[in-house]
Length: 174
Image (cartoon, rainbow, N blue to C red):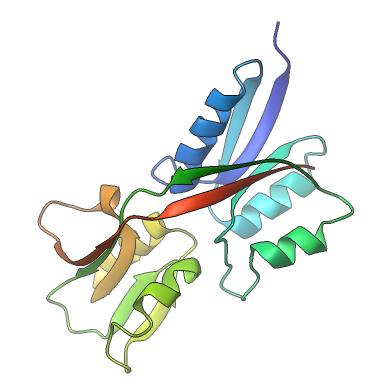
């Protein structure tokens, strides 16, 4: 019987993190994986603190709303986490969409801010969400622009820009 291991990452199943978790599972078929999805990266970090021996899957482009990024976490947990795997897997195509609402709000995950920093009017308010999926949910309520995954879109959306993004994924043993 294969050993059981827990892998914590960002959810829900619509996220790139979940798709990367499935790729990681496929790379290690000798393990019975329990993938635990969390609503935000701070929730992922909190969960692994309570689950010694688990693993955590993080994208190298991770950035939290408070400015904490992957590099910060790598060094913060240097003596408690062990980097056990690194692999590449593309994100779902990243898109910038525009609605007819004139709210001046762009909904996005903090890690994607750089791709639209100079594409939007200077007066645009950046409203950060815990994931690209959550950004799209907020945009549907009252946003004017949104950076999200193409897979999240309804067919009626106006896409202003599309990017193909390769991502580096890191897995740590906690």
